[in-house]
Length: 485
Image (cartoon, rainbow, N blue to C red):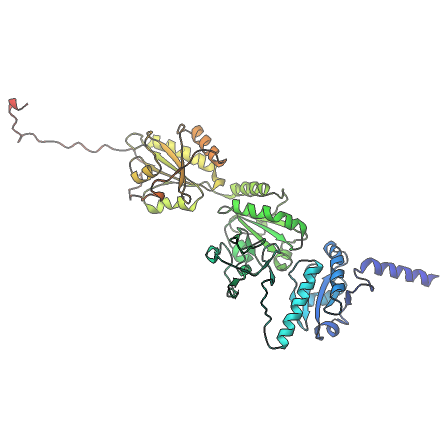
């Protein structure tokens, strides 16, 4: 009786901790049989390293079993209890669960596809095809344009497709390519640029993402060594919540472009960074503050998952870290460059120093400085010039006709501007800028369809203006007869 009870307890414990029982087609792998069955065999293996307590591993069981059943007699499918066989897991660099690898003898590669039965089948067949061609002394190839490779962003798969407008493809804030771009006839593998997500259609231009692809190898250079404020998503390609977040994350990246860097790291592939920042679920979002990065620079983001929530949070953090903008006097071409580098540029034309003394001018500049601080999270440029000093600038923005001071806000990229029609006061300017920040207000094209040429002038010395000295006129040599008038 005691023996039967002990056996029952043993069976209960085994059933509790084993994810794959003997009736499944998933083969149990242990240190005692791993080399004999896997690394020293000629067969292709898909091997999952799992932990019995891991929720993601439990969720994977139905799809993994289905794949094992479909691949029976074709590809071997196995599982390693990495919690029990820690040395074996460590031997293959397993740091998170589940970790899935494809073995061809002693060679192994991480599985990077969708965590579905179809994904596992595709990976197994692909590995078998590559091995067969290798045995022929050739590289795997074919004429189909259905070859599918995994994207560096969010795990979407994109086929090889004919690219008709390749000039539209350009690299935007992405790591430098470490390998030549692969081509196949007139087809190009868009994934090599790490630029695209979603589907690519034959007749549509490819979509360029503003989300920056991060990896274990570029994370330090792009994030930790930068002075920028970063929002980083640690995701898993198979994660449903990550897929739901994707369009919001991409939209937020576009709205924050030029202000906050937005990146994404596939934590199932780049496990070193995921482990360093203790990523335990997906998606995990972390903020890396602006300036020099330390261990205290990282914050967890626990806010809403819509683009508006993400943008609002990022801009609030940006405002905490960013210094107020400098109010720059336009004295040459270089000083106007700030306008081309910012999303919008606030241009003020202040009265001539003879019409408004130093104290008067400083009052106006103080108003601009206070408003610059208030709107600093917008990352606008702020410049001023004296009336009449830059006639081309005044003409291009249609300023000066209503007297001075005057103001216009210009988008140097779109070559459009909006003019302040109200009072040049702190309240009047604030209402004008507030309307612009909400997308309200009328705009007009910059005259000449380009930013104007700037004349080189001397910067203001901070002093009152002085009238030029009157010239004495000597009339002693002038002989005027009385009747001349």
